[in-house]
Amino acid sequence: MTDRPIEHRSKKGRIHTGRVWRLYDGLLSCDAGGGHREIPVGDIEAVHLTFAPTRFEFDRYACHLKPKGRSWEIIYSIWDAGLAHAEDHGDTYRRLVRSLVEQVAEANPGARVRAGEPGSRYWFELVLLILVFASLAAAVSILGLAWNWSTAVMAMCAIVALPFALMWARRNRPRNLNPASLPDMYLPPVPVENHRSKS
Image 1 (cartoon, rainbow, N blue to C red):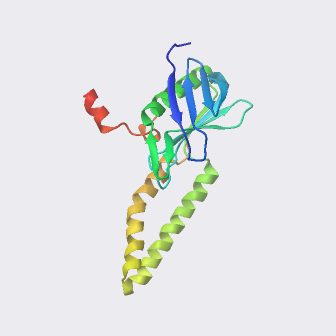
Image 2: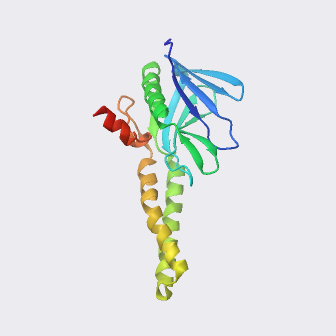
């Protein structure tokens, strides 16, 4: 195994335990709350990548893993450091996930590599989004005859939220992925300064 594993730290929320993930050649380890567990890469049967934003962490991504005979594990791209404050660990997340997917595909060719929410959940949440925006549009059109501050607030909320809703719908549509070439849209964006330093 390599002497220098890829290390990534993640924490879902304030009430959750932080986790330190390390990926060696053929082995994924996790340290959390004083406990330690290891997952052989060849035992991973499925990898699902999702775009998982919240109100305070818009650029949050998640990698769901299904080891053989175990429950799902989730690796998040952020470290929640408190209310409305999250540390972006997108760089180590990108490196760990790309390498992990490559190793899983090599060690277990039958493993499923997918993106997006599970089919039934995706369509349920998409219908909810459509209903919410339809309700907002109806309320604005009805109240528009008597335009006031509440109508303006509803219209502004819809305008601001629509691009994010469309992004969520596009990135979380269920689909299979090629492990050898993961699309950038399923991983945290590379900071602008990193692009400049490479050019």
